[in-house]
Image (tube, rainbow, N blue to C red; front, side):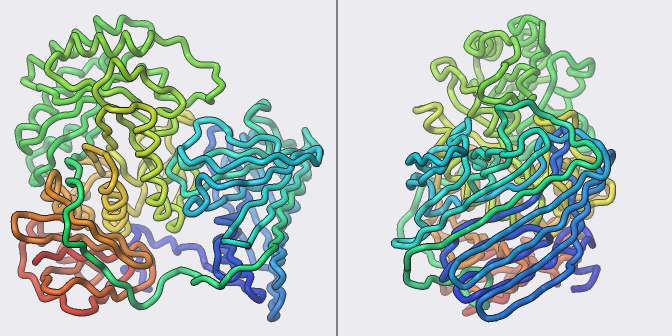
Length: 639
């Protein structure tokens, strides 16, 4: 891959982490940097990941740099040793990581580490990820620190709290008749026999249940002093037998299938806008204004000194695009919600802004709180929503959070006082590697199902969701990313400008389309999560959003695809329209339904598509038989 191709794919020339595939008989895994990924036995996924992480006092994860020291492989055994360094701000941490696997299903991952500097950390050590597909709702046997065992289960709906505490080992069925036992041992300076506990990472759209070292019930952050030594170990054992399964991963062929019947409608599609970027968003030269979203999700602080100007820009955007406005209002602490909302409604009236939907969130709830609290002193949410209804009698009143599903799940609104429920998502809270980001689509159906369980009978609204993090509920700010790397909790993610974000948006819309979501906002009109650069050069995701805006509200066609493909199909009158995206870095050749024409947005088409707002309206070519799709390429098809 050339540097130019990397920029077109990822928006950065930072190379993805090298993937080393290791095998010992039927035991296989990928080693990506220092992370163990996709531990499989006879092709069945047993563990999604084992990773050693250092979290700072704001829950940010400084990246580790690993050097391969030793690699030994035979038919029935492998051994890899790596040296790792984590250096950022006041953190200087070194570790030796050893990964050893055997054909009988044993796997040992050990870390011996030493702090070179003194620093505060919320968590340092192993996290173990269990997959969610085929696992959610299933039994698991828990071994505790004292050696006792209890039956439990992986939650079906997303738990806001820790579903399992005091863990030394977990045993669950991987496939009928095949079981894996995962044992965890750790010694932290403050606890020589550190326990582990589990959280439901689907809260953050991670495609996993995460078991992590230490407990959130203990004080954090804690300090690792210079010279402190930390030893931890994760061991897997497989027992039982099962028929071999496919190992998964990219391959050269796949099929896209459409059913004859119609499914539910595509959600109404919108775009977001934040106040700090609203002037750019409202500028006549902004290419995103040429799109026709059904709505715009617009954010404002009710006590902002420039509130009137902000709302005027939002009104101008709505007029230009013909879109409704979903108004997100943040209420300052210590002020009367009724007075603040009445003043905001008056300001809206003066600018001609008539929000179709209003969501109100007290400012203290922009920061995350553990399920057990302590919770900030905030006026009752029911009273706030009633005041919003009084101030905006013509608007649909939404409850929920302006941050992520996690916060909504932990602070559930009184359903009787709202018409709908909302939250948003970002895929880079915990990890920012390409694989983890694309995996987040797996968790979206569970997010929506859990939203519906939180507020039965009301409409569901998601977004504005994008790769970048618009604000950080878990720390003082989002992570700085001036070097345009793949880092967690960054507002500015380089992949937004590449084909990666276009494929990710198709995957997101496809994952949401078969749920009960009424409206879906993806990406922003301007800013780091916008659809073009400041010079007006279009990102590939611009064309995906153009297609999605056209699809919003139309009858969806049930569609399925093999492998690492995402497909969304709908009817536009008598015409079938499809978006098909390759969600992987490996070329695929999907077989499309007969009779389609269209175009492919890939590395070869990148330059022309970046210059032409009407690229989608250009001549179509027949899409007969297999279509070659490069990494993260998108097919726009009709017929």
